[in-house]
Length: 453
Image (cartoon, rainbow, N blue to C red; front, side, top):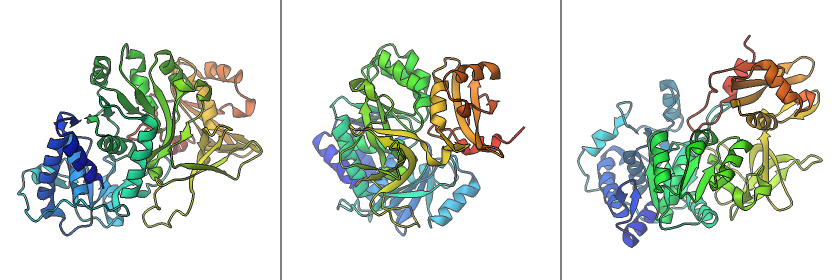
């Protein structure tokens, strides 16, 4: 399915730039050639792994494996040797490629011979697994999500309807492609016939230069990355800045609105093939606290709502995975494990992950509510609330913070804005908060630190 998108674009707009300085025609030619060089390594395989940071070569490898209709496990480059071995064994993968000598080096394949028996398969295979990706695992073990052609197809079509497409679109791809937020940029741009600018790492100066020159029109960033550049942007031609992946501080959204940066809040996960709700905040600022409306084909349901309509967010859509590998299939609605509600106009509001909610003296405490208040203070650059067991109250909040403020100043600031039971019972100052590759705070790591003296 993916290779057909490439063939279509190479035929209809051969000289249009697609992947950095490579045109659709050149990418198509290289993918066909690369498929022939990969084939000797994979002809006896149904599933292989790709272990490498973002690069043009990695994108080409992924597309070439799609052309051969080989399932691709996009392996997190932060995994330890033990974790890598465990994943490959669990997924029954015998062949893996890497940018170094950890596995079969990409350079060795590129320098190898072309196998004339290799055939790029252009028949539609909507039920076949295209890619396997791990969930973010911010608080537990990774789960493997198989995404099929039908889910990728449903996603790119729905996303296009909401975000639109323009001939001059150029989407920055700096999020890791082993996470759905990164890979989805490549898939959307390929389907839309528009350009991608791919970077191996977040090169702040280069990105700002491109933005101010007007060459980039679309960004997908997690809040922490956007916060690093937003105040430095003086001029731009951006039409979409898609922000998701973790808690989005209201102060960041307000800065974007002030500077007329077109921020789109979004919500999604690996299991939903990336974004499943989104909206342009500037077009409806009254909904600033929400994560938007469902994309076409997405149905939201709130399960087990309380008296205020807050419950577990469940999603049904052609974009939703069929089920985790080795687990039961998802029938009907996917329970996201997030707590939230839907307002009268259909906008979704996420309050917190169910596992992150604290119950203290019988009262629910939503960490994001406390974090939102903290991020409004200019002297607080990073913060996170986690729960700690308490004999009297059951759980109490612990604040991890990166700030120049002392404990007393922090407590004085919070005291006038939050009910007493929501105030942190312990404050831990850190130089930075632990995060995964996409910028999500690793609350599991912080929970372990909460009990340290």
